[in-house]
Image 1 (tube, rainbow, N blue to C red):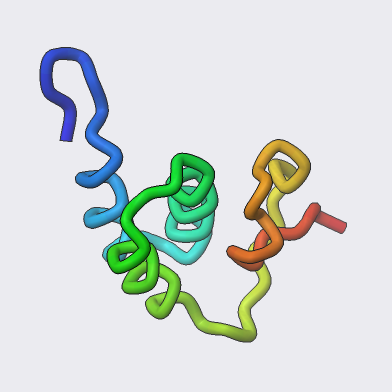
Image 2: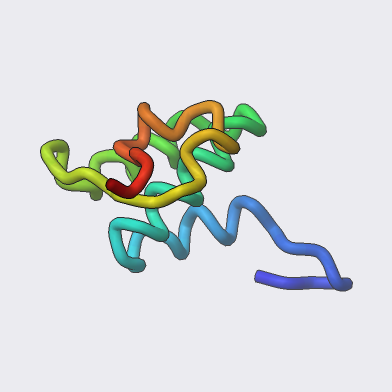
Length: 74
């Protein structure tokens, strides 16, 4: 995943499928900002429960937060 002190976004997205919903959502929202591969993002997105809500106070910093079910904590 890390090579020559650089992180591979592709590796992060592929690995995120096996992580918690919070990690999936954040990685997905970040990758979408970089216009990452739609096919891989679709796989990651479908691994999230569509009715789940991710409460996290980074929503304002991520353009696609709402699309990835991220909302500010109450």
